[in-house]
Length: 420
Image (cartoon, rainbow, N blue to C red; front, side, top):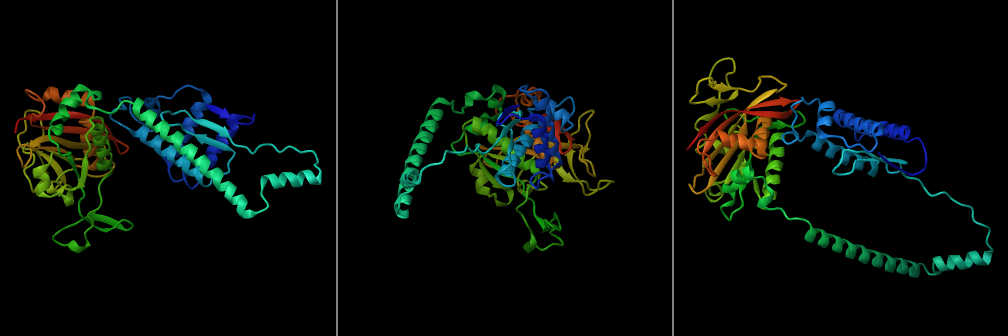
């Protein structure tokens, strides 16, 4: 732990400041962030300068299992980023005048503690009145207008120097830093995504946004076209899994130096489907356009027509093989500990275009499906299960997703069907 400022007991100062922060309006409602802050500070005090591992934080703070894989679960990075932002928010408002500053530098889980003090005031020897008058005249001109003019000149000069230095740093860093490119992505991922680099048009990501009725503060539910007025429908909501999924896709395509277009399902047109390679994020229950175009044939989303789960969304296996189930449901009641998801690469409405479907029966399953196709190890597993695999080979795959405290922590490939 880096400690700067006046000499004092850094442990007591840091721990007292932690308690002040966790009881502030910025953090008091977030138990997980409070727990993370206390943990990071405690560990840094116990082992100064020793870097904390993401695995250690995941298992000891967030209760992840021993199978935790940081490549598949970004919880630690996301929560640390949130905590870093909350600390900045605290010190920009309530803690603006605090003597002890606690920070988490980017790219690290080590805490730094800094002491902020006003410089000690030293008594100056008594000066003669005429000397004081001369000094005052030198610091501030007799004319207020002239004084402000001098201040303006100084500020303009400082601003010019600052902008010049900033421009130099930016240009230098841009020329020195390696630019993202296809070569920086692992070979299995590069091969898997290569069909989406064939056309000049940027790939289109279509995320689900089902129609709801109600209000967020009193409760929302899915629109029932048979009983609810379409005028009262709200179609501007999506799930947390979809949000994190698009972040993951953007990360991969940034590395491929290829921008993505993003559009919500309700605004998708047939021209979009004919003229773009498309990635669908979310199931047909919320990405409704998937109910209007040819979609999956082996692993199909639908509502159970009968039985104890009648009306619930499931994935139906139309050609079950030995040892496979005919239907797959997420748990009927919270907490969601398991989900199932489909990954399918299909030809689009225009045969020269591609459609990739990444969808779970819940938003967490959707997140897991996207994470599966954005990590090298899982892509290698998928490609090994597709007969005669090559870039652009059509397939449908079924995943079982294990979920812990609202986060997909493991995805297992249950079945794969090759071909159109």
